[in-house]
Image (cartoon, rainbow, N blue to C red):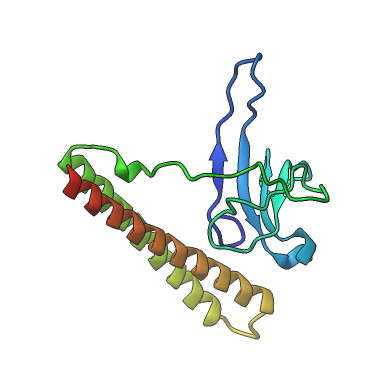
Length: 165
């Protein structure tokens, strides 16, 4: 997660004859100015070296509207990002599918409970509540909400895939 949105990583290859470096796809919010916000492609999250930028503020990465290089004057209309098929769509044994779903739900619950406990602790603190603390708690809770939402989508995919098998 970065700035409350899911990050994505594409592993590069070690083949010296192929230019295929590892790349992160991540969201950057407006904390450094609106002109720096949007979806980014680069070798690290938030690094100075970047490959591309899409000035979109959607919950999922932009499929179109990319500027490559990131300071290009025009949007590249020949670049489209497509999502990889979800792991849940694979044909797997029913018991394995059930175990994956159970582990996902337990992990999401554990993260949500930890986030709520942290939020309560910060909000119950003695003295004045700093704006930075409140913002950090908000970011944490938004991230956990996204995790729970992603888990719900994944569970729905598991159910659909199980019915097809």
